[in-house]
Image (cartoon, rainbow, N blue to C red; front, side, top):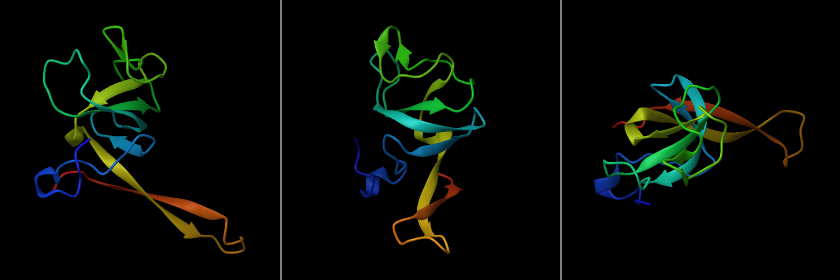
Amino acid sequence: IAKTNAKNNQHVPRVTVGDSVQCTKEKCKGVVKFIGTPYSFKSSGVYYGIELEKPKGKYDGTVKNRYYFKCKSKYGAFLLPEEFAENHKKLVKVKGTSSKVAKIQTTTSSTTT
C-alpha cells in the first residue's frame, strides 16, 4: 500500500479496509473491502474493492474465480482512486450522554487535488 503522506502519492485517498466511501459512477455509498491490484486486471495500479449498498456493481468480490472479498452478486465494484470520494468520520459528543458515548458525523470530500 502506498504511503499517503509522500509527495508523489498525494492523489491516493486516505482510506483503509472498512472505511465508508461515496462511489461517483455508481451513485451510491459503499465500504472498502480490498486494496490492491486484482491479478486478472490488464491495467496495473491500485484498485479499491468496494461493497456497495445497492446492486449497482459488476462483481461479487471475485474476478475470474479469484476471491478478493465477500459480498452479494452485483454489490461489488473495483474502482480506481478517482472513481470515489472519501467519507470522513469524526466523533462528536452528544449532549446528555457519557463521555464514552459519541455520535459519528459523516461528511464527504473529493479525493482529487
